[in-house]
Length: 284
Image (cartoon, rainbow, N blue to C red):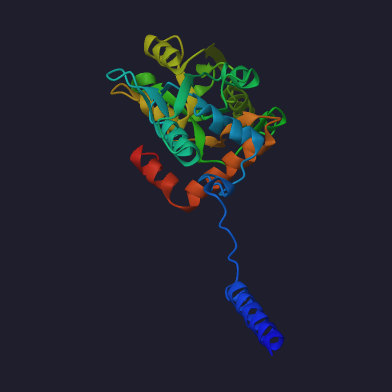
């Protein structure tokens, strides 16, 4: 009898232990915060950034080549010393989306002659500087889709008697060194059956000064750039020609960075940011 009682007691204890052990299911542990990185805002919208883009994030600063002599695009304000304009604001917007702060940029002033070498030598990450997209340039650099489209124009003195492009026959035109303007004018002159001469300068203020002093008869570049140089004695010819599309340029072998920046341009077009900036700088 004692033996039977001991066996029954042992069985009761065994069932009690099984019931306590199996009464709840084990919950999976949550991942630690470091296991799931936050998505980076920006052109690609993903959490995993390409190495070329991550390098900029790790550095903490976006390096951009910009114009400093083009009002409304990239212009150094003589009162504040700050560079301002559409292209500066585009660079700031990219820095905000990529680095979380629009002020995390450094700008380097460029000209048509220096912007390519600065990019080639890795002194800047990209160029946002009225850089016209051409098939020839695409062989050396990556370009985003256009963020602005313009046309070539001519700034002349009001009392010059020049009213049309044909009136430039035999005249001297001031153009920027290494710009696409000269070749476009040569092509247009041949089409119209006229002959023109050229004087090339390193910067737009120099061309404008040459026009004022009579060393050239016309100052030619994209119309929106000329708008910044009009005064009471000059005017822009109504005629324009040869559409000029501006894109952000990156080094040719930086394909991942190029794709990221192109996606950024698509984003700011689609979400209305670019339109707002164009309105701000009176370019729309």
